[in-house]
Amino acid sequence: MKIAAYDVREDEKIYFEEIIKQLDLEIVYIDEILSMDTIELAKNCDGVSILGHSQIDSTILNKLKDLNIKYISTRTVGYNHIDLEYANKIGIKVSNSNYPPSGVAEYTVMLMLMSSRNYKQAMFRGNVNDYSLAGLRGKEIKDLTVGVIGSGKIGCAVIDILQGFGCKIIVYDKFIKEEIKLKAEYVDLETLYKDSDVITLHTPLLKETYHMINKETINKMKDGVILINCARGELMDIEAVIEGIEEKKIGALGLDVIENEEGIYHKDRRTDILINRQMAYIRQFPNVTMTQHIAFYTDTAVKSMVTCSVKSLVDFINTGKSELEITNN
Image (tube, rainbow, N blue to C red; front, side):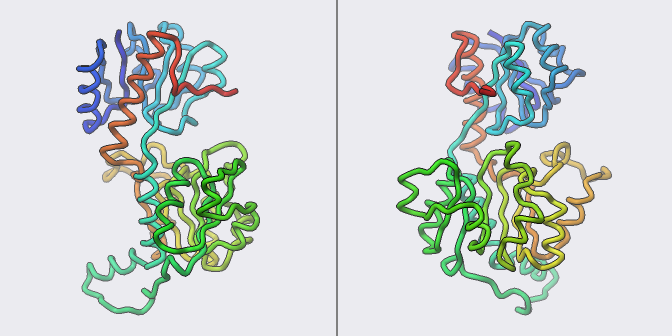
């Protein structure tokens, strides 16, 4: 049994090696992403493991099929980088990975605290020995209404953490969980936009959620609203968000993801010219805290994603099935 692992980071290799010791398989490590330039490196392999930087379109999928590779596993929770419909159509099976929601949930609440307490400005001032207070007065979470969009695993974990702050929590999701009703109030999306002091996004990127934060929805929000996004950058229309900051409609912004981050985040681009003008512009605002898509990045999560990916491929190869298989049905 032989697997090609693309875009492998050094911190992942220790967990790949642990899996090799447990299972009878060979892993070919490939530093580059899966592309037409590197796909031949997977020749004679039974399956491929990838990260989100690999854009798996119909051309790649057809070539994989030509190489008799029937299984793809992404070491990510999201899978919008894979043309799932076409993969299913030509008989290539796809799986994703998972990890405990606590890491992203903790990071989300951290960004809420940093945003509500003007941490970025305080840190920058301290670096130049400016210890003045003007403009640094913050808000206490207990006095705020926090709106959580999405009550999946991560959204639920965020709600659990927020219980300790004593704030009012409202939540929107198409699917209501009875256990969450004991901790938060389910409301419609319009009410959440209108009543929330803080809004945090924990919904997958779908056609109906693309740019759900836009000029129209921002106008429905409270003046000074705090927006947090540790989910997917494309959930926000970044031009509308920039306009909201400039007009002081948005009071603060905490972003771990941003639209069009591909090819930038998780890379050393210090000597390069970056072409994402929106990213370059929005980061300079004093009330915008941005990090490089690392909310997921803990030792627990990395181990889980590698383990899920490899075991899923092994299950596919041995049985044709995986508990983590995803389809477009």
